[in-house]
Image (cartoon, rainbow, N blue to C red; front, side, top):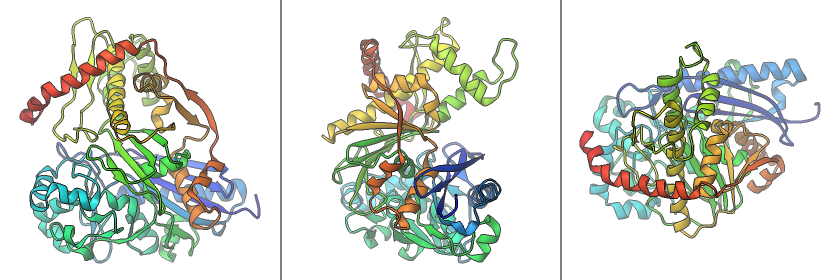
Length: 512
């Protein structure tokens, strides 16, 4: 192992954080994970504690990996040449002049508190002008209205705020004392980023916050700073270790599986589903999110559902946590395995049960924060098997809805790559392939964003020249091909899925 350099990637997710130690050829030496909670203090809110969740997890993972690296491989901390971070995004954490969080971080589109501010920005600035500047329409995903929410609802916090940091930006600050945000993440701070000029927009900021409250813009792979002596003492890293700016977890996830060539689609199966398509240009779409990439010259089309793994976890916690032959309690992993076996007992179409998976509103392509979850067609003959299968199919229909929107833009999908914890659920993968008529490939390493962060470190250090060099790290293990046997059933149910939403949309708003 000697005379080889190493990089460390750490990712902070919605429910779990992961770390990976990788050498310069992409070999994964060590990985660690730690679970944490998603805080929902009231309906429509979703928060993390930046210090006690994000930084706590980073310190835990960094110390665990550096210690094991020394014990197992004799790797010294100074042989780890760079560290890269990613996190759920966009997330907003206001910090004071000393960098201390002034409140818990407001998370991405699962937090829908800022709908009033979305409408206010649309009326004050204009929907078309917002779209012209940022290439994105405002929604529950947008961080700009959440900053405005803090300004209006918590003025005492706003007045003390020196900077509004994102998740990866907060970790970079803790490591280096530098306050930065990568441009990919900054684009989701809509309407604040001028995506064409690649800088903060004075015009847009005038309606939301002062420009000096926004961090310095950079690219994801660029070196933002070095680990300070204070951070080194806490993390086990060597002082002076390079720290890249980092990015959003979904983008690092796409990079981790080599979804970087134009036409490559990453499908991330996590607490929500998220997809990133490497696009030949910045497309015009108001149903999806057009965006930048980790490095200059690349573009993406992105989107995501509000729930996925969080919905399957909800069902397991509420309905299966004490299921079993004798009512014995099961671990979460055992419950997931049991649930998948249950779902296999239900036929495609779940015996006439249809689910709208909008249990936390919905992001793309409907952008409806007040959307509600629906089990439609329930009767006394339905079982847990039918309900769980219907959930998986409902999520698959929501993914199909997004894929149809991509295809309407005449942007080709050459290859779909599946990643994330949901990859373990083969019935879910097959359901998506069948309903979307899309072949999905699965790489050997599906660790996720922390592995992608390691490659961004390697790119930032100059070990590689191009983003597409990530292909040297990725090997495909298997593929999930679509079957046509059940397509007539799924096509009929997909039509009903759309009709059910259209006919209940107003009721959903009224119920809110």
